[in-house]
Length: 385
Image (cartoon, rainbow, N blue to C red; front, side, top):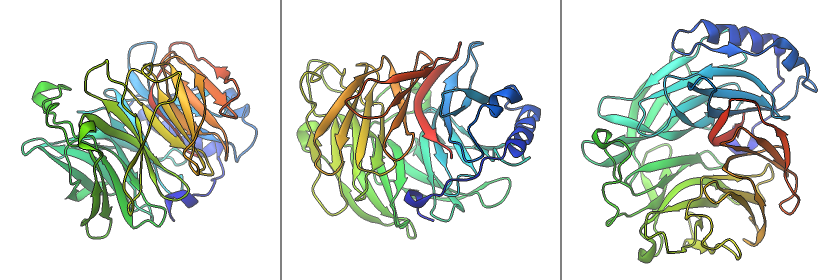
């Protein structure tokens, strides 16, 4: 089933609570379920569920599971800081990845009485924080760094059994692959190669800022062969292409993080189609130069016709028409970064101050739904069901 045609899955309270018990028993995660009364506040068995990496009041890192009111239903403790979350096409599993240059990921089946499975990066590899499932849900593709040869790779994991196992890798055809998505037809992997060389020995230090060559690669999922690779104008070679979302026509909307002089005001959003030349979109006034040259997340609404690009360092989330590429408006949300489609047309936005906000229309003020004490939400928010 293509990722763009996922179905809503009935939410089983009993299965969810049972699974949480399994998480709590797992020594690697020390999961902590919330009170059952929180689950009873849900509107029904087909209610929405979201997930985000977070930092908790006690300083530990984890994954928080939320409803569409921003209520934290449960949390899973991680061995380190998390980043992105990949959701299976049937919405029954998700994988949470460590923040770069982490070496762990966890596979969770929240509706079953099964403990999470730990995935550990192969020797000589580390995760970049993102991944995606194959169309049938059998495989997981994880962007990784082959740091000995300074080469981006995509680790391929068989997640049809329990526990999962790594079965190989394919090149990402670039340096620093950060985000990855599967085309609507399920045949093409789209990879945003950020272009930044790093090595675990130097942590998150960026080693090649003068020679960066970011790109977006379209790769045949069946063969691992490169179909096409797009780069921006050479003048923008320091615009690291990091996070992306596919719109209703299959175009990749990619957010940039600029590594050049802070006084520059480059375009921060690019639209890239497999069969067309890339196009960059200028940041509109009055936001030009005020977003600190950093886009943190990119998400399409449920219809795929509106794109949200969050700029947490600039305190704004900007919205664009996928059809006309026009700017639709912006919302001021301090440190707002995680964005997920709340339904076909609206969004939930999480922030580093613990808030979860609802945006119904790009030109309507956001409604703060919750601010659970002690939580700091990380970069990405995803819809689980």
